[in-house]
Image (spheres, rainbow, N blue to C red):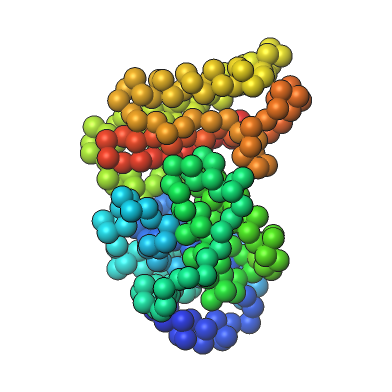
Length: 291
Protein backbone atom coordinates (compact mmCIF):
# COMPACT_ATOMS: atom_id res chain seq x y z
CA UNK A 1 0.00 0.00 0.00
CA UNK A 2 1.27 3.47 -0.88
CA UNK A 3 0.80 6.26 1.66
CA UNK A 4 0.42 9.62 -0.04
CA UNK A 5 0.24 13.03 1.61
CA UNK A 6 0.04 15.50 -1.29
CA UNK A 7 -2.37 16.13 -4.13
CA UNK A 8 0.44 16.05 -6.69
CA UNK A 9 1.61 12.63 -5.52
CA UNK A 10 -1.96 11.34 -5.52
CA UNK A 11 -2.62 12.43 -9.09
CA UNK A 12 0.67 10.96 -10.29
CA UNK A 13 -0.05 7.63 -8.62
CA UNK A 14 -3.64 7.41 -9.91
CA UNK A 15 -2.44 8.18 -13.45
CA UNK A 16 -0.40 4.98 -13.36
CA UNK A 17 -3.48 2.80 -12.94
CA UNK A 18 -5.55 1.61 -15.91
CA UNK A 19 -8.97 2.50 -14.51
CA UNK A 20 -10.62 4.70 -11.92
CA UNK A 21 -10.58 3.57 -8.29
CA UNK A 22 -13.08 2.62 -5.66
CA UNK A 23 -12.88 5.13 -2.83
CA UNK A 24 -13.57 4.94 0.91
CA UNK A 25 -13.24 8.33 2.66
CA UNK A 26 -12.72 8.23 6.44
CA UNK A 27 -11.64 10.42 9.34
CA UNK A 28 -9.34 7.70 10.65
CA UNK A 29 -9.41 6.06 14.09
CA UNK A 30 -10.53 3.02 12.13
CA UNK A 31 -12.57 0.05 13.33
CA UNK A 32 -13.89 -3.13 11.75
CA UNK A 33 -16.75 -1.24 10.13
CA UNK A 34 -14.31 0.84 8.08
CA UNK A 35 -12.35 -2.26 7.14
CA UNK A 36 -15.54 -3.92 5.95
CA UNK A 37 -16.03 -0.98 3.58
CA UNK A 38 -12.52 -1.54 2.23
CA UNK A 39 -13.35 -5.22 1.70
CA UNK A 40 -16.57 -4.22 -0.07
CA UNK A 41 -14.67 -1.82 -2.31
CA UNK A 42 -12.08 -4.53 -3.04
CA UNK A 43 -14.86 -6.87 -4.13
CA UNK A 44 -16.52 -4.23 -6.30
CA UNK A 45 -13.36 -3.70 -8.37
CA UNK A 46 -12.15 -7.31 -8.40
CA UNK A 47 -10.54 -8.20 -11.72
CA UNK A 48 -10.78 -4.67 -13.13
CA UNK A 49 -7.33 -3.36 -12.33
CA UNK A 50 -8.87 -0.51 -10.38
CA UNK A 51 -7.15 0.36 -7.11
CA UNK A 52 -8.90 0.79 -3.77
CA UNK A 53 -8.20 4.21 -2.30
CA UNK A 54 -8.93 5.28 1.28
CA UNK A 55 -8.53 8.75 2.68
CA UNK A 56 -7.93 9.81 6.27
CA UNK A 57 -8.71 13.44 7.01
CA UNK A 58 -10.30 14.96 10.10
CA UNK A 59 -12.44 17.61 8.46
CA UNK A 60 -12.71 20.79 10.48
CA UNK A 61 -15.64 22.05 8.38
CA UNK A 62 -18.06 19.42 9.72
CA UNK A 63 -17.36 20.05 13.41
CA UNK A 64 -19.37 22.58 15.37
CA UNK A 65 -17.71 25.09 17.74
CA UNK A 66 -18.37 22.91 20.81
CA UNK A 67 -17.64 19.54 19.19
CA UNK A 68 -14.59 17.30 19.40
CA UNK A 69 -12.39 18.40 16.48
CA UNK A 70 -9.31 19.01 18.63
CA UNK A 71 -9.70 15.80 20.64
CA UNK A 72 -10.80 13.50 17.81
CA UNK A 73 -8.28 10.62 17.83
CA UNK A 74 -5.54 10.80 15.20
CA UNK A 75 -4.11 7.29 14.83
CA UNK A 76 -2.50 7.34 11.40
CA UNK A 77 0.22 4.75 11.98
CA UNK A 78 -2.23 2.21 13.37
CA UNK A 79 -4.82 3.01 10.69
CA UNK A 80 -2.31 2.58 7.86
CA UNK A 81 -1.39 -0.88 9.13
CA UNK A 82 -5.06 -1.89 9.31
CA UNK A 83 -5.76 -0.57 5.81
CA UNK A 84 -2.82 -2.43 4.34
CA UNK A 85 -3.96 -5.68 5.96
CA UNK A 86 -7.49 -5.08 4.62
CA UNK A 87 -6.30 -4.79 1.01
CA UNK A 88 -6.22 -1.04 0.47
CA UNK A 89 -3.88 0.01 -2.35
CA UNK A 90 -3.51 3.75 -1.73
CA UNK A 91 -3.95 5.77 1.45
CA UNK A 92 -4.38 9.51 0.90
CA UNK A 93 -3.68 11.27 4.21
CA UNK A 94 -3.33 15.00 3.50
CA UNK A 95 -2.62 17.70 6.03
CA UNK A 96 -5.18 20.42 6.53
CA UNK A 97 -2.92 22.86 4.68
CA UNK A 98 -2.69 20.45 1.74
CA UNK A 99 -6.43 19.91 1.38
CA UNK A 100 -7.39 23.49 2.24
CA UNK A 101 -4.44 25.60 1.03
CA UNK A 102 -6.77 28.60 1.16
CA UNK A 103 -9.75 29.17 3.45
CA UNK A 104 -12.56 27.13 1.91
CA UNK A 105 -14.86 29.95 0.84
CA UNK A 106 -16.63 27.86 -1.80
CA UNK A 107 -18.84 25.26 -0.15
CA UNK A 108 -21.38 22.66 -1.22
CA UNK A 109 -24.65 23.43 0.55
CA UNK A 110 -27.21 20.60 0.42
CA UNK A 111 -30.94 21.38 0.27
CA UNK A 112 -32.49 22.31 3.59
CA UNK A 113 -35.32 19.77 3.34
CA UNK A 114 -32.80 16.97 3.78
CA UNK A 115 -29.82 18.63 5.45
CA UNK A 116 -31.64 20.57 8.18
CA UNK A 117 -33.61 17.65 9.61
CA UNK A 118 -32.51 14.92 12.04
CA UNK A 119 -28.72 15.32 12.41
CA UNK A 120 -28.76 18.65 10.61
CA UNK A 121 -31.24 20.11 13.07
CA UNK A 122 -28.87 19.41 15.97
CA UNK A 123 -25.57 20.02 14.14
CA UNK A 124 -26.08 23.16 12.02
CA UNK A 125 -23.75 23.27 9.03
CA UNK A 126 -22.63 19.67 9.51
CA UNK A 127 -23.77 18.43 6.12
CA UNK A 128 -22.35 21.46 4.35
CA UNK A 129 -18.98 20.48 5.81
CA UNK A 130 -19.47 16.84 4.80
CA UNK A 131 -20.56 17.64 1.25
CA UNK A 132 -17.76 20.15 0.74
CA UNK A 133 -14.97 17.79 1.78
CA UNK A 134 -16.47 14.75 0.01
CA UNK A 135 -16.96 16.68 -3.22
CA UNK A 136 -13.38 17.96 -3.00
CA UNK A 137 -12.05 14.46 -2.35
CA UNK A 138 -14.10 13.14 -5.28
CA UNK A 139 -12.50 15.78 -7.49
CA UNK A 140 -9.03 14.72 -6.37
CA UNK A 141 -9.46 10.94 -6.39
CA UNK A 142 -11.78 10.77 -9.43
CA UNK A 143 -13.33 7.45 -8.33
CA UNK A 144 -15.89 5.44 -10.22
CA UNK A 145 -17.23 3.91 -6.99
CA UNK A 146 -17.66 5.49 -3.55
CA UNK A 147 -18.39 3.31 -0.52
CA UNK A 148 -20.05 4.78 2.59
CA UNK A 149 -21.45 3.12 5.70
CA UNK A 150 -25.19 2.92 6.27
CA UNK A 151 -24.68 3.72 9.95
CA UNK A 152 -24.56 7.37 8.82
CA UNK A 153 -27.87 6.91 7.02
CA UNK A 154 -28.66 10.56 6.40
CA UNK A 155 -25.11 11.28 5.25
CA UNK A 156 -25.28 8.41 2.75
CA UNK A 157 -28.55 9.74 1.32
CA UNK A 158 -27.23 13.30 1.05
CA UNK A 159 -24.07 12.16 -0.73
CA UNK A 160 -26.09 10.02 -3.14
CA UNK A 161 -28.29 13.01 -3.95
CA UNK A 162 -25.27 15.30 -4.34
CA UNK A 163 -23.65 12.90 -6.80
CA UNK A 164 -26.88 12.61 -8.80
CA UNK A 165 -27.58 16.36 -8.93
CA UNK A 166 -23.97 17.28 -9.72
CA UNK A 167 -23.83 14.67 -12.48
CA UNK A 168 -20.76 13.00 -11.01
CA UNK A 169 -19.87 9.67 -12.68
CA UNK A 170 -19.64 7.83 -9.35
CA UNK A 171 -21.69 4.86 -8.17
CA UNK A 172 -22.38 5.29 -4.45
CA UNK A 173 -22.54 2.01 -2.55
CA UNK A 174 -23.83 1.65 1.01
CA UNK A 175 -22.14 -0.72 3.43
CA UNK A 176 -24.16 -2.46 6.13
CA UNK A 177 -23.61 -1.38 9.72
CA UNK A 178 -21.25 -3.64 11.63
CA UNK A 179 -22.15 -4.34 15.23
CA UNK A 180 -20.48 -5.71 18.32
CA UNK A 181 -21.76 -9.01 19.68
CA UNK A 182 -24.22 -7.18 21.94
CA UNK A 183 -25.60 -5.14 19.02
CA UNK A 184 -23.86 -1.80 19.52
CA UNK A 185 -23.03 -0.20 16.18
CA UNK A 186 -19.28 0.13 15.70
CA UNK A 187 -18.17 3.75 15.84
CA UNK A 188 -14.93 5.62 16.37
CA UNK A 189 -16.63 7.56 19.15
CA UNK A 190 -17.34 4.38 21.12
CA UNK A 191 -13.78 4.78 22.37
CA UNK A 192 -14.92 7.77 24.41
CA UNK A 193 -17.23 5.57 26.51
CA UNK A 194 -16.27 4.46 30.00
CA UNK A 195 -16.74 0.78 30.84
CA UNK A 196 -20.16 1.35 32.50
CA UNK A 197 -21.22 3.57 29.58
CA UNK A 198 -20.13 0.94 27.08
CA UNK A 199 -22.34 -1.61 28.84
CA UNK A 200 -25.25 0.84 28.78
CA UNK A 201 -24.72 1.88 25.15
CA UNK A 202 -26.47 -1.24 23.85
CA UNK A 203 -29.75 0.35 24.97
CA UNK A 204 -29.80 2.46 21.80
CA UNK A 205 -30.20 -0.54 19.50
CA UNK A 206 -32.56 -2.07 22.07
CA UNK A 207 -34.76 1.01 21.74
CA UNK A 208 -34.63 0.87 17.93
CA UNK A 209 -35.54 -2.81 17.94
CA UNK A 210 -38.52 -2.01 20.17
CA UNK A 211 -39.56 0.68 17.68
CA UNK A 212 -39.35 -1.85 14.86
CA UNK A 213 -41.41 -4.39 16.77
CA UNK A 214 -44.11 -1.84 17.62
CA UNK A 215 -44.26 -0.38 14.11
CA UNK A 216 -44.51 -3.82 12.51
CA UNK A 217 -47.09 -4.90 15.08
CA UNK A 218 -49.26 -1.85 14.44
CA UNK A 219 -48.90 -2.30 10.71
CA UNK A 220 -49.93 -5.97 10.91
CA UNK A 221 -52.97 -4.98 12.95
CA UNK A 222 -53.91 -2.28 10.44
CA UNK A 223 -53.45 0.50 12.99
CA UNK A 224 -50.27 2.21 11.83
CA UNK A 225 -50.78 5.93 11.29
CA UNK A 226 -48.92 9.14 12.06
CA UNK A 227 -50.38 9.40 15.54
CA UNK A 228 -49.28 5.87 16.42
CA UNK A 229 -45.80 6.52 14.99
CA UNK A 230 -45.49 9.68 17.10
CA UNK A 231 -46.45 7.73 20.22
CA UNK A 232 -43.89 5.01 19.45
CA UNK A 233 -41.22 7.69 19.00
CA UNK A 234 -42.13 9.34 22.32
CA UNK A 235 -41.97 6.01 24.13
CA UNK A 236 -38.51 5.29 22.73
CA UNK A 237 -37.17 8.69 23.80
CA UNK A 238 -38.69 8.27 27.24
CA UNK A 239 -37.19 4.79 27.64
CA UNK A 240 -33.68 6.08 26.90
CA UNK A 241 -33.96 9.26 28.95
CA UNK A 242 -35.29 7.30 31.94
CA UNK A 243 -31.93 5.52 31.95
CA UNK A 244 -29.96 8.77 32.02
CA UNK A 245 -29.50 9.37 28.29
CA UNK A 246 -30.09 12.83 26.81
CA UNK A 247 -31.90 12.07 23.58
CA UNK A 248 -31.99 14.40 20.59
CA UNK A 249 -34.40 12.27 18.60
CA UNK A 250 -35.83 8.87 17.83
CA UNK A 251 -37.79 9.17 14.59
CA UNK A 252 -39.45 6.91 12.06
CA UNK A 253 -39.08 8.19 8.52
CA UNK A 254 -39.41 7.08 4.90
CA UNK A 255 -36.28 5.33 3.70
CA UNK A 256 -36.32 7.11 0.35
CA UNK A 257 -36.04 10.72 1.60
CA UNK A 258 -36.18 10.69 5.43
CA UNK A 259 -39.42 12.64 5.48
CA UNK A 260 -42.42 11.55 7.58
CA UNK A 261 -44.70 9.04 5.92
CA UNK A 262 -48.32 9.98 5.39
CA UNK A 263 -51.14 7.91 6.86
CA UNK A 264 -51.80 6.46 3.40
CA UNK A 265 -48.14 5.51 2.93
CA UNK A 266 -47.99 3.92 6.37
CA UNK A 267 -51.07 1.86 5.56
CA UNK A 268 -49.66 0.81 2.18
CA UNK A 269 -46.35 -0.49 3.51
CA UNK A 270 -43.98 2.38 2.73
CA UNK A 271 -40.40 1.27 3.54
CA UNK A 272 -39.36 2.96 6.78
CA UNK A 273 -36.26 3.51 8.86
CA UNK A 274 -35.94 4.44 12.51
CA UNK A 275 -33.09 6.81 13.39
CA UNK A 276 -31.79 7.81 16.80
CA UNK A 277 -29.28 10.22 18.30
CA UNK A 278 -28.64 10.47 22.01
CA UNK A 279 -25.91 11.51 24.40
CA UNK A 280 -24.59 9.04 26.96
CA UNK A 281 -22.39 10.92 29.38
CA UNK A 282 -20.25 13.14 27.16
CA UNK A 283 -20.52 10.90 24.09
CA UNK A 284 -23.13 11.42 21.40
CA UNK A 285 -24.12 8.20 19.64
CA UNK A 286 -26.24 7.66 16.52
CA UNK A 287 -27.78 4.54 15.02
CA UNK A 288 -30.58 3.45 12.72
CA UNK A 289 -32.59 0.39 11.83
CA UNK A 290 -34.55 -0.23 8.66
CA UNK A 291 -38.07 -1.38 9.47
